[in-house]
Image (cartoon, rainbow, N blue to C red; front, side):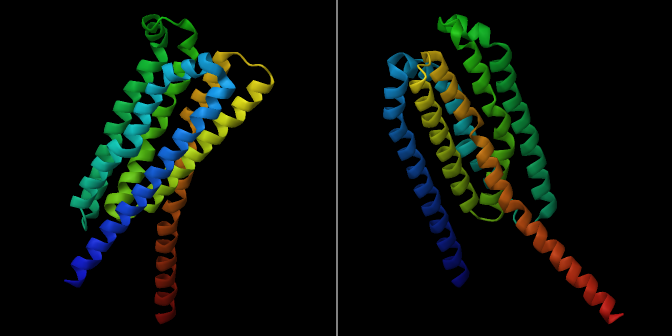
Length: 233
């Protein structure tokens, strides 16, 4: 019964952490739009909105879509290291293939897409937005592993907050500079798209900060055992 209570406590704690992070991310996403539109103007805001869905799909896949699937299979393989390694390998391959497909499609067929959209000036922005898919496989795999293997929601929450904070600060900072220097609407859109596409780098750095801790502890334990064994000899 005590074990069940601990498990229930971890579930509620994890849900609370992810919910708080999601709310904070949504709040920042809503608040930055007004100053951005004031800086960029209606045309600049329109330019960014045309390209935003391509980034939004990558964000959804890396935040909720793939991590949930990976965490589910990791949790089912609990206590079986070989099965977990197999899950991670297969998930990584699937993510690379799918995200690679999106990246190649958007990058190399941007001209075709902008012809359909009726605005050739968006070609460069779509190619920049495609870069977001390069970060999704590793980010999603790490988030899913932490959530399912270690039942640790903190790395996911912190990475989401860090990514959104960098994205919002970059967009507003560059937009203010372009406003002062009288940048054109497409420059505003390019800046916002670049900030969104490369913000996952921050998320990746934060997630990687949680990885070495376990490895270092393992190395420390191994070193201690070796020293102890030598001492006993």
